[in-house]
Image (cartoon, rainbow, N blue to C red):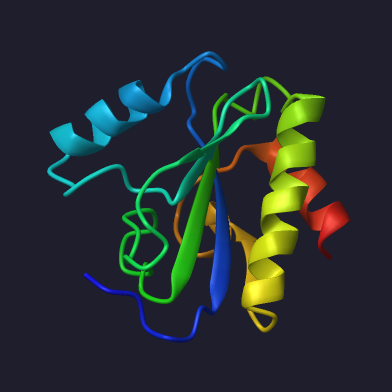
Length: 133
């Protein structure tokens, strides 16, 4: 399904899995849940590489009931127990800044701000709120 013209939120997630989780594994999980493809627009692995997921022109499958008008990024790892790597945080900042240039009125949020979940984990969520208050 195509995105509306206005993007209102940039949503940050964690995979809630091992830091070495691959994009293929995440896609497999999403296909098993009957998503049409991987749910996120970008995935940032522990080495800081930003991988493409679903095209930005398509609505993500990332926050039940709140996907329209959002862009979604997922960092691999479980950030209630671990911390994102320096490379992941640098890449996340670069990506969010790029998205903010395209969508200046969009609000940067952690998944938990839009739905009942601990995602993106306390360690990433706290960093997110300190960096983008």
